Length: 466
Image (cartoon, rainbow, N blue to C red; front, side, top):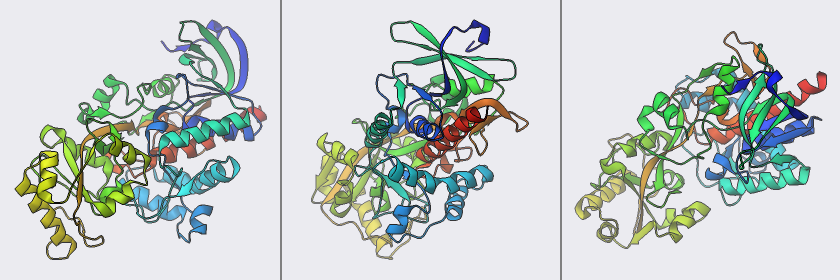
């Protein structure tokens, strides 16, 4: 039992707002709560805050930001919301989508200009199904850099983060009001801390094999490219307290993780004219549908392997991503002056690979139509030298979770909020609908930061009023 009666607690300390998890969601919530006048403590199970954020590409999509305006990019929350809903085939909650889209721009501007997070607009290509350039990321375009910046901002703000603090139980009364929590240190000792409001900023359940098998069995055999600490505790605590969950079958996959190197290869390579082939040297899908659902397409190929194929023009773009440079240094990128040479370097059948490259060149020239419905004509045809990376599909993080309202309060089945419980990030239901195909690029960090800010601010305001 992970929900205990308050009379079982020994609170040596009580803090107005407690936050579980020191990733993008938790630290954003801490900034917002502190700004709203509440004392905050963040608990992190790891020795150093990192989590799933550090494994991401560090990109936060947002509409109508100051950075977009400076670049002359026209965008709006309404257009962003329309893109999110279109990707989910209108299966996400439209009210929450509207809230998330509306708050995305103010959240990114606040992080950049008020909190000093070095975000810049990613230009040069658009991710699948985004109608405008709206990805904001650190210069290196890595989640590790984003986490470094968030940690530095937390230190500058004096945010108290207790690391090596694994929360094992909550103390709550019969109506779902949380009185505090118990956390365990690596040496096995435990401490109880009281609170007036609690924010669940811990991620989803991707590291919990049993929950993955129960909710998303199609991805159980894939590599898990998330944090092992994502065990779903936040979701289960919310359920025990009377909250409800939705879209537990939703998740973010990725169809381009260098294998066996374990490095994410940016989907920008596909969006700029690259394509994927299987071990037979043949294409098998429309790579522009989205990198999330492409994970399933890749996993369905022989040995669950595909190869990213592209040329020097696209290789130069890849070099602007730190993760791609890392893969290059590890020897994951193969290069040759001819299709036959690339086949030798990768072990692909030479005739089939040459034929596939020639087909895509014909598609780009408008001489033939792609059988998978992809439009190649907007980008130049590939020209030698060619490059390839051997990849597989992976599970990045889950998108289902606790239903929250516009203030990130966890709600019951009847729609009423629990007394003092808030959630964001992977603990809360995302805006990706019910399956892998609804994930619009950046949805994870979008809801992590936006719901984190909403939760922190609302929790602090509730405590102040009380």
